[in-house]
Length: 125
Image (tube, rainbow, N blue to C red; front, top):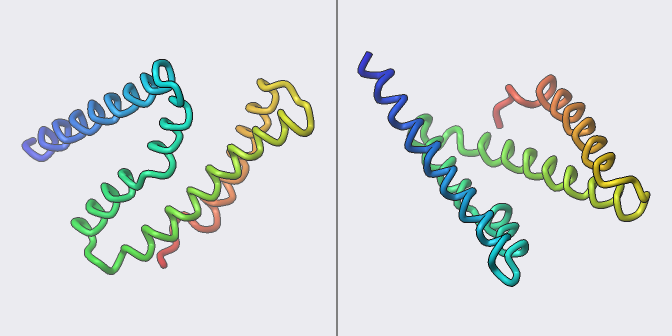
């Protein structure tokens, strides 16, 4: 029972921290002159989440699993970048409506995620 209580407390703390971080990014978008750029940089380029995942992986598995962490982070990042670029290309170059661009990119994301799940998710590097 203590393990479950400790797990719930840790999960709640991480959930609250993530909510605060997301709120700060939203405030940048709404109120800062270059808020969209700042928020995107903090979300995508700043390696804060990476350091957290690195620490948790190292703590749980040691140095042996860090290669797996790096490869799967690179794959996930690549999929995210392609998702963003697909929305941009569909909307700006192929002249789809924005809603349809997002829908099509979401469908693509689901398909590529299924392929990732079936082929790479359980591999270690």
